[in-house]
Image (cartoon, rainbow over the protein chains, first blue to last red):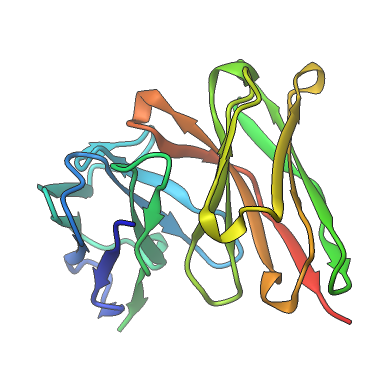
Length: 108
Length: 120
């Protein structure tokens, strides 16, 4: 099983600041890395797929990068609606996808 | 538009079974795998398994082997997840999610979630 480790667990920032979230895999996941946003009481929403492709309707302030085992989700300038929990997910060894433990972005 | 609408909350006793439905609409049901993911309160996301609605083929996470069954009814474009021998640790929100090759097999559309509470 590929283990995804997200850091930090919590990121306290102010609106307008830049957020940088990390996801590290226990072995290479090639380009099969996605990011999701989850707000309280809601289902997760796909933000980024295949490392750097924004899903439909996702604002340009969200970007993904990385390769192999190290990946980053960047939110260039936090909007009030961006405060949420973010999960990375791999499907490199389908059919055994796994999720990271999540990073909570909260208001400083 | 593309939607996955799940059945309502359930309360079950330990040892019982629960069957959650996921009604799909707005796309060709048989062309996209449906996966199930659960989330205990305050915890992360845990993948349970997948089902191909066209063939009915399934694959389950080892943790749930022998306890979970994923099925479908193509005539009403609905997927189901049944979990048996429930225990308190199964208390969680259960989500169905569509997998799309167009998004690198990521989970592109999710149901709203179904709360399952296991309590005596």
